Amino acid sequence: MVPARRSSVVDEIFLRTHRGLGTPIALQGLWRTADRIDPELLRQVHTALRVGPLGRRVIRPRVPGARRSWRANIRAYPLEFTDGTIAAGDLLDWADQQGADLDPEYGPGWRLSTAALDDGGSIVSLTCSHALADGRALVLAVDDALGGSGLTTSPVRAMRPPDSDSAPDELAYPELPGRSNAGDSMMLPRAWSTSTARGADRSDVRVNAWLGRAARDPVSDWSDAWRQWSIVVRGSFRALRQGIPERPARTASTREAGLSTRERRSIAGRESVDSASTFGVVLQCPASAWESAAAAQGGTANSLFITLIAKMLWASGFPSETIDASLPVDTRAEPRVDNDLAMTEITVERGDTPATIREKARIAYERRMSSPGGMPEELLQVIPDRWAYALSRGAGERDVLCSNIGTLPDSLRTLGPHRCIGVAARAIHPGLTADRLPRTRLSGYLCRIADTYTLAIVSLAHIDSPETLHTLVHETATALGLPITLW
Image 1 (cartoon, rainbow, N blue to C red):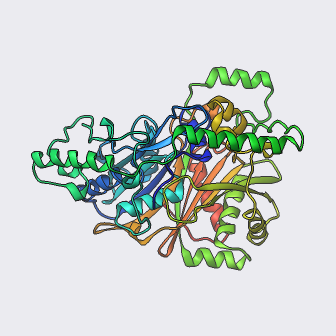
Image 2 (image 1 turned 135 degrees about the horizontal axis):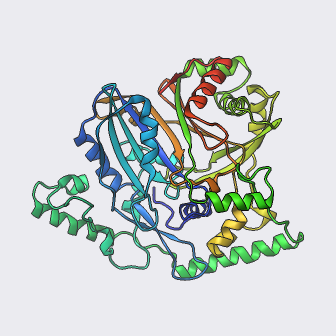
Image 3 (image 1 turned 120 degrees about the vertical axis):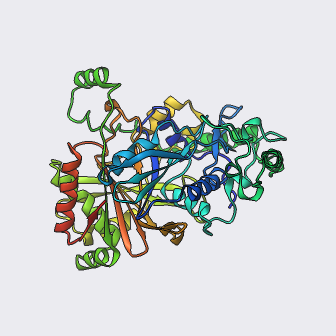
């Protein structure tokens, strides 16, 4: 599937968070195997990812108002092997460290890493900047690398640097830190692998020539800028005919809630460089048990998921009688690796059940959060980043986030001959500081693979320790009739 060659409004929101304008977000897929994974197998997966859908980066436009574009980028961090073994109980602490230094604009935006566990198994992590992909897109990218059939065309193979007659130097295979690529056939796409350094050199030439012959992006920066400004001017005129839009309400962060302006400034000045602690937990539940529990309460697997996250937050001491939940919606009409999502929301009340939440969610999925005052969302792409951040700050942030990623493809059930005893997807927040804590207290990421539901939960604030989070998960799940196993 040929990808969009220009960035979307959602892409650029996540790109701004990468630059510090908002909450930093990276997506992560985790695989647990019962045995030690074969390093050579992971090298093959790493190679496939380099030339797959995640192998791209953002390029700034030359013309004001034009959207940023995507360019193929096969630079990658080396496959990382952690020395020694780590305790199985500490695997999420290890996973939290795998999101550092991802750069969707100037460097590799993804990382593949692995560690041996003291229970005899392995943990594998694929982490990518949210600017490159949303949760479903990360699944599709992995499926593509593992030989699945979800994508008909690898986006990098269909992508060409805009406004250039040949591939730039950066698209040649780079020499990665701490090693030389010369003669390393595993650093080359399978189609061009050879067993000699001389053959590898010829392969590099063929790769660059191949990228240079890729189809030209038919939309120049000038054309794209004209299109963008036309949409913004016409859309703004229509919106202004209804009156001057109200200034968008600013969503208070967790740390700012209930504080005076003076106190907020004091906190910002004192803690702007302090790291913020986040805690995570992953649980598994037989799909039959999850769906039976949902049906017994008049709900669905999804409404039970939302109920669980909301009840956890109340059990942690959240004082409000209502909880606002943001619900991502997959908007892609066909499989492709992009940020192809919208947001909607519901308000959960203490008396709600999976049945009532099911009805609220059904209605919510028929509408989407819109831009302030009916102004065209393209406005965020033609104004300076800091202005765009000010207009969109807190967009989509509510008390909890409930992201249902859906059913994962069968290709993710194994890594070569290694059976996966657990597969999870979630978001992490590398570099999050105390002055940038979002409104969101709890984030949940639900997926199903084979006969198992896996739920990853991340606490961004309000819960004081991993032990407290584990206790809340266990007690809330038990009360809802869910037999769970914690990673």
